[in-house]
Length: 192
Image 1 (cartoon, rainbow, N blue to C red):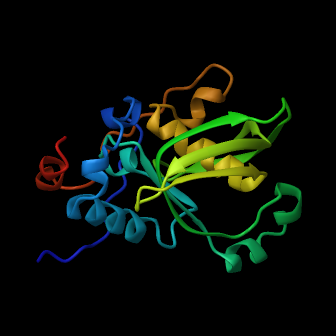
Image 2: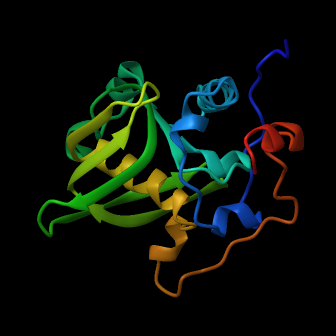
């Protein structure tokens, strides 16, 4: 058996970040290969950020992971203003969301695929979100504040959207070496 390890995150300029990702079929979701992908995503996210979408590791599938540990929330001096709360590790498959009301809030946002840079991005404060869990259950939740922001940001990756698309002038950022992500062998086993 191959040992599962974190992989490089692809950077802006990699074509997968501008593609609409493919839905995860029930057959793929229940496969050992898909669960291997989830473990790779979990290890790759660890200690680096609060969310990671499959396209960020070169995989054009509609899945992302989120985790905002309590310790990091407690260290954030602006946690109350951001309405930031701890999020346990969550696997979000084939998500959908809609805003609840028109209220948007703007905060600085970063992205693992656009290292070093941040920008003030407006996002809906409250959303109704739904997704499939790895065991096939449908989950619905109202997200408010920072968790809603994370969900919207990661969902954008599944649509081929980067946070820079919300900025005036829509600056296009591209790195000379955008990286690989997962191996071609794993992409083949995922049917991509």
